[in-house]
Length: 582
Image (cartoon, rainbow, N blue to C red; front, side, top):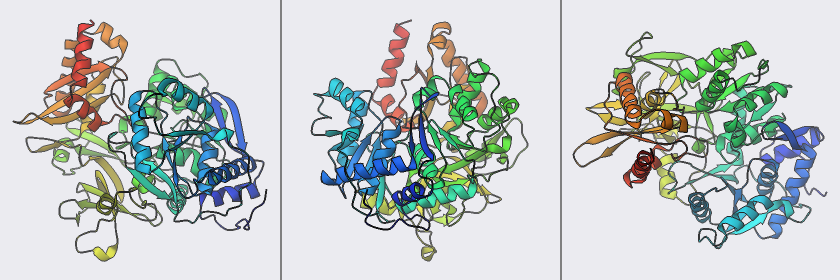
């Protein structure tokens, strides 16, 4: 294969440059392995193979006139996603990863993202292409979109060079409101800066191995499962999210079998592993002693999840200091802060009532106090400030405000949305305009001894009688109120009925709970748990069947989308149908 410019010998400045370095220095070493059903290896790629495949796909995309444009990336977890992603980057095609639709609602999201990205090209696999055409061939949201099986593209030689560091490497669409997806423009420089910061906090070492079930179309899954391993030169063992959800023990078994050192997940995944162990669904004799970095990226990280996981798997060799909470968001590429390796994450006990008034009063563990887990510190050139959003002034330590971030990981903005980009990505601190521009995260938090503590979302705070309540606290009380309820399966939000704000709590229950517990009793338990936990009365409890709540691409419940479903009557109709079926 002809390469028209010399292979770089210094640090790579783009992701294709990083791949070229790996293909030169360790050509026949394993880069990625896909685990069928989360267990047995089913295909692998060396760096040499990946470089050849990516460059060939780049040549085919350029020949099709897509170079310098954009395309939707519609792939299940697997190696073809990695080939196509790097191929797009070589050809300067801004890829927009999207979850493979299972229902018509997912197809509508696909359409909206394609339109926002300004493309009609959808890159995918033969299996997905066939399935979509078979099930949705005449659907209007599929009309006009061209599905391209990248595995069937003709082999060709890439004769172009590398992209520039400031070129858009990816359009990462936010997974908040499904009706208004926004594409975050992430550059190659952003990605490599984020990888550098991640490696600064959580060094890889010569024996580094990633084991990941996270969705590759999601920012956390892509950076932790694909891009960090590529830059660091460590093999990555990948499995489908469904394989983990069906059997969380598979993830742990893979970490044991392949001696994983780095693996990441949101809090609810660690809770699912604990639940699986308690139910006897984790293989005996597990050895997790190789696991050095158990990154936790939920917002905020749950103390109960960290403590119970460490206690449950201590006998398997898991060390508490391996728990590495972090805070991040797509607009900052991913990670903004992280806990340092080898240190147990700090926990602050604070007065619950004071926190609702945005005051941080340290307390001893016990009634009226709640634990907050530190999300670490910024490193290298990143800066975090806590700002009062209305006045844009910096707050003092232990004062709750909006988290603002600046540094090389802050993305270029939202695609095609200059006004929103200006407001979100280029904020300035009052009286300190010369200090530079900041990303407004929309998240709330405070700093204590240099450590960031995340307390909630600016727009999700529920205000009752002049006090602030964080929905995740209400949801945790609801989720633990009765058997048959699960982590990450509730949504708390407020609605205005014209006279006052009403608190609504929607909870998913599995079939066992719905069969064995009367709905009135289940709702009463939820009300009692929230009252005891937050001294807060719930105006309405809605119980729905497991799997009904809208979720983000990473599996978290979408509060705003859930609220919209409530307001248009969908949730009430589902609850009424459940009652009539009993």
